[in-house]
Length: 602
Image 1 (cartoon, rainbow, N blue to C red):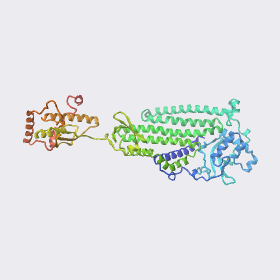
Image 2: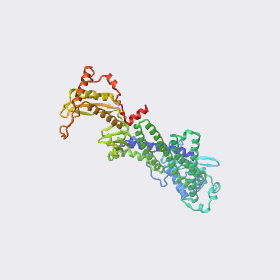
Image 3: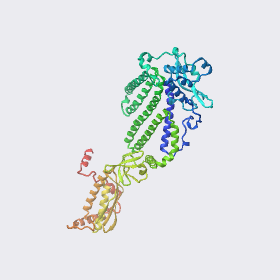
């Protein structure tokens, strides 16, 4: 039965993954129509012809098997016999009710039936199993160490509708008489008679008790086997003890343990000759846990792989990749969650394929009723694709300034300078003006200065030269296009405009360099003999300080000397002069702690 599980479980897994992908596609585009969704197989209920109902539910292979198991569970062998295809010759030789009882005992002793989820629920049966259009394999059994398949075959009733019954070839293999050919199981010999005589759902209580005991034993054995395997791997492969290999191995632990537990449990049920009724009741759960083990493995590997990728991208400073990984991880986890639901529903017999196809038709109506949700989802895709902001970026969104902390499928969280967290729907965020400060390579330094109207022309020339010298001499100022210009004369004063870019790695460094520049510029202004203009509307009670005549004469003499030597750096500085003064300003400034640290480093 284990090999049977492996083959048929892979089929239902492919079907489940397919339906999960269809559901994920529907979530990403809710306007899809049912005609656009391909059918997973040709047994879809949409193309199934309508047949009159059969009172015994024998229109499909699954219905026939389930009906037979239900009948023998109630020990109604007259009803169970109606699920057997007994030809006239065999009917004359053998009693139909004894054949039904014999088939049950054969399955109890040495046979198995596929889980209901793996048996076709279509009137046409499985048409791609290379067994012919009217025959399906539903299990296996063994007699005299010879294994054979248990088949169901389709015949037509008086209405021309299909009736699925256990095939004649299978019935002929049943050994009779029952009491002579098939001995009682070891359970009947070992356990007390009261546990055998007392039944629940047609099965001795002893079978249920042993099944429960086997659950715990299978779990413990699976836990021990998984631990041993991981221990051996870690000893043989030394790299397994280092990250990220350790995280990947941990991801395998729970899924492999669950898979082993189910496999051991199913194998133990067969070897213990547990009643086929009990095994069929538990078969659907076995398939579910098989599928959940696979989905859990995908979930664990997704977590481990995304963390490794996220860590590598963070080391490279690729925050856009980190945002994309976080978004895709959530999307895939949602898909896996729905796939798990699909697996459970499909295993219990719900027609999820038709339901998913109906989602395409209802997508338009849903989109109209959930426009904001769809808009936010599309906005999320836009943010990931265009990447105007990424996790960790400092930006301005509308009037909001802060750091992006999380980009979700519905909304984005921004932590403001006040340390509050603001959540913005992605649909709204994608339509707002976003100013990203993180990706600045330079910071603009553009203050304006107003000087006294009674400043002399030579004082103005001096200020132009010396203020430009400050910009050119500072190591953190980009010389192109650094400039200081005398741009206007107004009642506010003589206006100077500075335009330069500061080379800084972040905003804090920019503020530090800007502060240093202001200090140097104020020293130049103080040494020029003039001063900044005061507001004409201000009233000062104390006497205003004015530049001394001596200082003014000194500045004018300095400018005359520049003129006589043709060294007045107006309107522009010579390249050689810029090169000569470049870096003559110490930054960090002399006397500061940072300057001391720089000297020790050098």
